[in-house]
Image 1 (cartoon, rainbow, N blue to C red):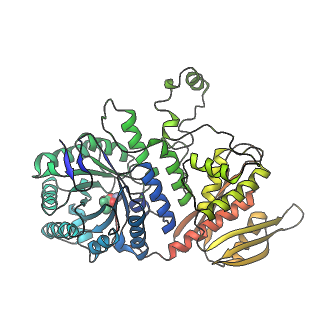
Image 2 (image 1 turned 120 degrees about the vertical axis):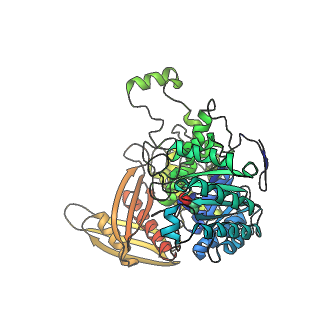
Image 3 (image 1 turned 180 degrees about the horizontal axis):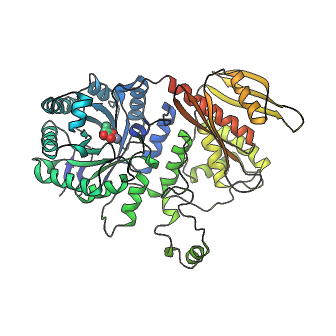
Length: 524
Ligand code: KIV
Ligand code: ZN
């Protein structure tokens, strides 16, 4: 079977469309909000990774969401740019249509709940009204684009006969992709396979659209449910980098893609993903959001290819296939390597960053990053790839309002610690000299003195980027304000500078968060 799709043309039956919702379903989860510049950077990385569709946001939710979808639609050309809308929401479809207008290829994704529980308690609507809104939403979306997706929110807990009626109505009203989410992560792989097989067999017109799977991970079954959906006929998968998303998250893109690639014998599907970019994209997201993946996370966790036991190490040395089902290089891992020395010039530095997949940096970021590299090379014997990644990612963070300038610390066991800190706030230089219970306390007090705020420190953790006592420190700082949590990260060969950078990063994220409106009745 081949399908003629408005955005992709004729699609072979073994081609799986990768729909990335990191910037929508992922970004709406607690602690993961990103500002416009961060979203644009992620969107660029997703395009380089080769995703087919980027769900860029929910434009009606706030001006910030609208602007980011619009900007991504204006700048990112290769993937389809998708905007979310409620099927029955006032202004949702018009706002989504307006936001994707600049896109080379744009999609509107409208959704409404179809399960008895959601219809009765959340929507307070009769099933017939929901059917009417499905038709109206898809018809309205088709006024803006031929590429329209419709989702049955809480689809996996929907009565099968009613789900067939909803899907039929959506197709008749012009939807070209039909998504059946397991919104609450309740389904098993067998459930998902049965739902797709049923819809494909029973709904008139099912053979003219793409079916899509969207699995949440509340029972840890997100990836398994996605694979089962593919085996039953779905050909689009909705997923996020690092599996971020509401509650326990969404199915992780990197895990699904590598399962398909590694198990071609039983999963004979293809994607457009450049798998060597997976690690880099994962790290970029972790850096931007301040949430590292756990060490044992499949594909991108730092232990994913580490062999600790002697028996395993011995096996891998004799033949890597003994304990490795895919090569580390295939997902972007490289061995730590000596990169540049303190005599390296700016051109070599730029070439090295390019070779590491950083693309073209703007001049200002390049200059700042190069100055920090020179400083690091003066202080650290060996500069590894990991050091460069930490440094460049740190530099690329958008310190929208507050920027770190300098820090001097006096500390010891015989007197209180004293921090002399300089920051730039909204372009204006400010400084403070403050004491504290120790050097970290003094440094954080100085930030509070320069930029007074009510947020409280919830977590302060320090790790090393590489090995050795001259390794750069990588710090995470978590702040809390009115129940909102943000994590910031910083890296520097001076642990205290790294801590202040992380604090400032978290503070900037909090300022962004304060300006965002909560989307009304937004779930999933
Ligand atoms: O999980 C869900 O149901 C969603 C929909 C909005 C697609 O995210
Ligand atoms: Zn979702």
